[in-house]
Image (cartoon, rainbow, N blue to C red):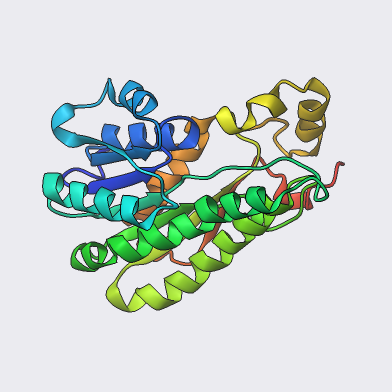
Length: 252
């Protein structure tokens, strides 16, 4: 498939995990890709296999409005437009509520939801021009609760409803806004969890398909939502969770 030939896609949080896999998928389907994250070395490692003429590496922290403004400016300077914004950058604080500090809470909100606000608002003039689309990385943690992840659950819950509300506001411009909601996915964010065999076994027991996701498993649904194949989808929260949400997380 070559659904994004001639189109420009920004992928935040693309130095590893889901973001890196999605950036590769967009590039494989012909897109110009702006890779965005806070660490240049990791970004350049991901970009090493990309076509340099269709790739921009941009170091930015999405919680900084100034950084996001520069990201948009650099993308326009190189590619002259924006067709897809994939806001994927996020962090997770895995602590009990009692141990979660105000700094933990604020940093999680700053990156996981404030970052989406900054990216959408600053890219908006260019998305209006292209009648483009936005895809957020939400989480099943935004539609239900988890133990010891209050800040992350609250932030991803905000992502879910921000997606729905933004879809209503931007539909008049021909801009679609959707989100994927993964469950446990292999990434730097979940490395410690994946080392806990008992936890993973419990997750697999609760999953209809008996497994967790690789980052590449999320890239396909993201590309679908960003493509014309999903032309009538907006405000959707697409679960990509091996069936966890089908039973509300309860074991058989």
